[in-house]
Image (cartoon, rainbow, N blue to C red):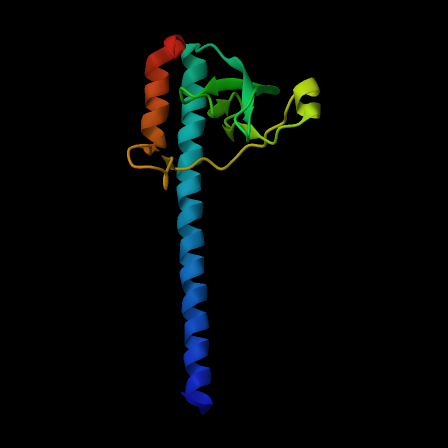
Length: 144
């Protein structure tokens, strides 16, 4: 294509890409808001039921060792890689390994909760967040 037709086509493509990106961002924001609500309801129910909280630990990215954190909450998976704190925040409990973290503890940042935990992983390893949180509540203090 040459001339004005090529310019028009490129501009249409740019608009289509921007529209697609905006729609994708809106969908992600809606999913994160829904997942955040699930996390908040879980934390409120866990507190209401009197589920024992733990001082959470985080694993190093290399998988060797665990690091203390200042976070108090509930692990929501058995491998203790995801948790919810008493302030309704969701955490992925992995941190860069370091001597400083080993000595003074690690400070993982809250993460936006996913609606489907493990999405994009191996088959059979993804689970809806609502299911994961429900199973954790049903297990009570016998989670381990």
